[in-house]
Length: 225
Image (cartoon, rainbow, N blue to C red; front, side, top):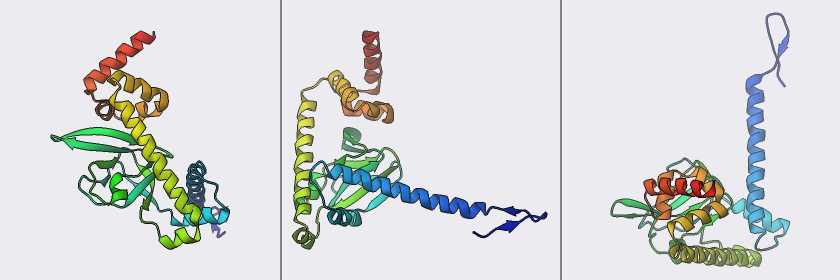
């Protein structure tokens, strides 16, 4: 490494170069971590060979988005699905100029909008509640790739079916639950969301006002004490 000398001829480190090298190393470590998160998620569905894993990692498109970025708008045609590596994204409708939040997606969760599968305009919006790192993948995967790697077609089908099933179950449970039951269920299944999401978004998701959410929280605290 190149060295520099002070007036008394003592060598000093090239701090700028060392910082650059450290940043490059951290980027590589982060990329490796992101790769592993994705592979761990896919391993829930199928066993992939090393070659198949490499193909998927080469196809994966890692993109970073700032908090507040709108990924999808109502009426927009899109072929994209989203896998959250880091951050939080939200689905919501606009009803009479008011946002109605329906779902949150955080690390190792996938959002595959119905419009991306049936090529229809989106019925809702998707935005980033936090600075996020996502894999953005097109629903139209190369058919030649499926011929060469049949397991990838099976993987796409299994993931889509599983996500659709979980989404339907969650929606059905949501419809028959009271706001308090929804909140308690959220605390049990996804306790991190209560800390990460602004209260007004959480209240919208529960179907109540922020004031009602505040009163409900106080009531639950008194009940628990």
